[in-house]
Amino acid sequence: MNIHRIQNYLTLTLDDGTNFTTNECTDEIFNKIMMHINDRDTLISIFYPDYVEAQKLKNRILKSSYMTMEGNSIYIKSISELTVPQDFAEKLADAEEADDTNKIQAYLNFWTLLSLNPDSRVRNNLFKFLKQWGMVVSKSGLIVGYRNVDIKTEGSKFNQDLTRFVSQKYWEKKYSEDDSPEGYIVIMRNDDYFITGEDYDMDDEDVYIGDLVDLYAMLTTDESEQTTVFTDHHSHTFKIRLGHIVNMPREKCCADQTQECQAGLHIGGKDWLEKHYFGDVGLQCLVNPADVVACPMDNNAYYGKMRTCAYYPVKIVNYNDAGHISDDIESGFEDDFINKICYTGTINNEDNDNYTLNIPDIAEVDKNKVYQNLKELALKCMSDRNS
Image (cartoon, rainbow, N blue to C red):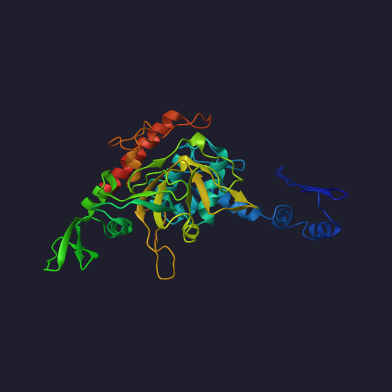
């Protein structure tokens, strides 16, 4: 190796041609370098403190079945030619090393959808935002977020209490690895609800409400006065129903990454929602990474909410005695939303939500590959749910 120093500017050239430079080489640093002149790794760490960690990540990428590295850039070539952020690459490597197939699928699908986001700032920063605020990702790659709303109208059949109970119990069973919503019925006794098996022996005080799966389907598809309608606290103009996509034109959302409170649909982490901002009722929502418009930050820290142009509310959240949201879910759980999106970019079921998934014109994104990946994603999620 060769060392060249001119005043405070110093260059270290390794025998393989790699160069490390610094313009802050004080006499103290230079003396430290000379003490370790024959210790290659220590010399490199003096110049490049993160070198050891970078080498560890590089070795992990080399072992990956999905990621490749060119220079210092990481790619998942089966999805796109876009560079993968380091935070995300580390999480995918963690999942691979743990042989956690659900998380591997979740992260790959997340990147498939995030690759369709037209804003490079969001593609680079979104996973860091999720990591900072402890937000997880569903098996089909969707972000789990939260927001507060107000009640616009109580439903004649599904009032707030029944809406809360059915949505919470349905997703509680969905999140369970060894259970599912199928086979449960909802009973009311003395104005309180509970679920039980289909073979339950009812007594005189019991009122049969319905099958849990059927009730949730009705709750999330019916648009009549039977179901409770929510609205945003700020404008009271949006009609928000569980199971129906809430959206606004992306061009009307503020894409300024430095502005916290601007136009757009706001979604945050659990900690942010627990402050009870802007509404009395907390909703859990699913968000397509492609629809995120901004992850506002200040002084290298992200605000507790992001802006998106669409979200899909799935349930009313529950708070424990300490005032914290009691959702305890990890990345990789199964969800139903992705099958609403056809791989051609339009709604796949009844056209009751005006939502499309646009494929942006990005040089690093092959549209034909995108269509195929989305088709396989939807089919895989459908197969997993039916198995």
